[in-house]
Length: 329
Image 1: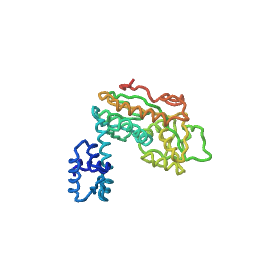
Image 2: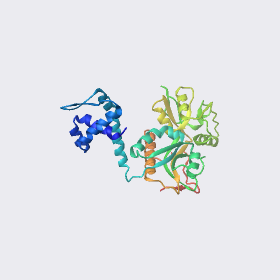
Image 3: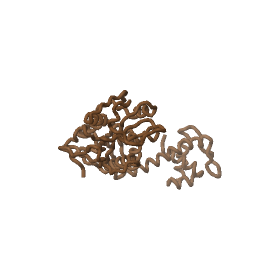
Image 4: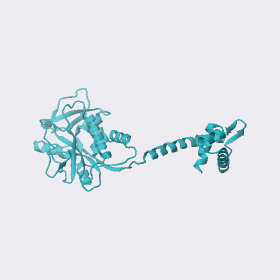
């Protein structure tokens, strides 16, 4: 079906008159009449009754209008967007996110990013931070948001790392009327019925390192591989867990959970953006980093009154520039 015939039909339907439709379409009247007649012949239905007062739509004509009017509107909207791309480069970028960060931030971050760059095709890959670092090094990712702790691998020499924020691991249990708002001493984790992330990488590795250094044995009664089921389980009662603060705060918005700081010592991790030194950030990627940073700060706002990146005095420093590391300025 010729789309020009449909467009002419819609204009005649709306104007109710061949002369006015021809003026709107900037073509001569005989051409309008010919195109309407051709469409009727192609479809084998009468679309209008020709009357002295103009073109009166038939029931079939009204039905066809209802079918094609939205199509034409969508076509013109797409045409405007296509013209808006003139002179602009269309991007395709690959971003890596830690699964726990992704669970807490993805929706908010992606929505904000799409508002700024609707023409950019964004690919998000969820992996643990060590894997994301390797993928950035290999050139498989344009950018990654990773979490670094005391036991994390060093940032490779060909990777530029920029600290965005610091977050603590926190103790999370089911909300109750007898909840305790006081911080929990790390030693009090011993003997508690805990459900923890199964992976030995990431923050679980940092948690066990601090426990070993403090002479504390942590033996979870249950191990789970994903943050969602882990926190759902804790919300049902009976078990507690330890997760990053951002993850806990996000879950507390819709689950009956209570969070307590861990102290003496605290376990602090740094959230970083990382990219390959030979693939500098484009304005699009820089904006993505800015959106992530704002989202992280928003998630951590509230009871925390310390500056981002500066750990508490009782927390181990986890962001020393390691040998071979390049930090963005």
